[in-house]
Length: 381
Ligand code: GLA
Image (cartoon, rainbow, N blue to C red; front, top):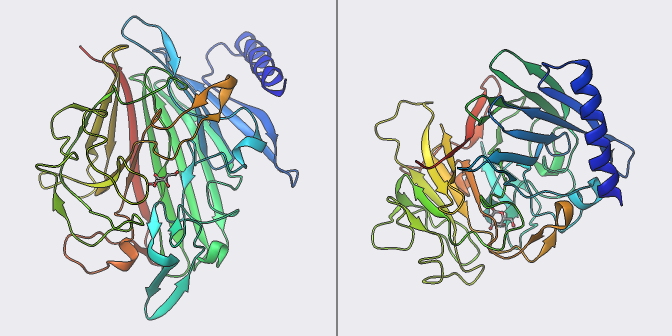
């Protein structure tokens, strides 16, 4: 019922908008309210080439990405829900959200900066995952402002996280800008500053299925990951500190392989299947240069997603913990029916500072954290 009402509302509101401002590409509507009565808005935007995107102020979340296939047929390729209640429930495994303050895992939820030890929530026992509990960045309402030019349009969202929120030191001012251009590239720019030394790793956690969200599997998708090495993990998915070659393992995606081809060849005590951080080959790249991390394609529809970033790592998560959640318009999200490509610094980097080949994960006052995660949509030749 709610779902129907929302769709009708958007359709009606959109038609009014189209009538009143034919050239505008970005619109904002009320999506719902949190239990505390805070309003959650949805920003809608479209490109001149058939892409339509919705972003929520709750968790700065991507709710919908509609893109054409090789015959021009449009499908929604990301997971999402129809109401705020579902987004705030345990069924939501970070669908489309910005995760943080520290995306991915921190061993035992502990880290030390300048001799001071901090303890975070161990919400993925025994470890910390994706920023913790109710005040993780994926669960709070961000402020927002839209923008558009001739060729691009989007929305900037910002949130100030108080010192000590979810156990993290420092007041953090975070900003996320979603920009959609007419090549159907959605670029996400993350920026943040702090007033005390802290750890930070922001990333978007969208789940993709290029047949269309709710399709039963991604095991038939083909994947390329631009990485010679990965960061092995223990059975709680904490990185061991090694940077190991992918060669000779089911993690060798340097040329295209279907996801399903080798997915059952290996496993961990927890969550058999793909859930690994890859060390992106950046030897030929400048610092801060945005390069291709991965390409995902669906041979059937021809839809292709190119993920680009300036970060050192990308987590390829194959949806092993999905369990049939019911999402938008009754879509069912079964195990391995969606995958994430989370660009990032390496998992548990705060406890590997100074180790050779490991990135810096500490942000200090006066510095600006910057990260580009770009999702480009096209079709295969
Ligand atoms: C990630 C992790 C996975 C899992 C999902 C959320 O991307 O790498 O292990 O926790 O988030 O379910």
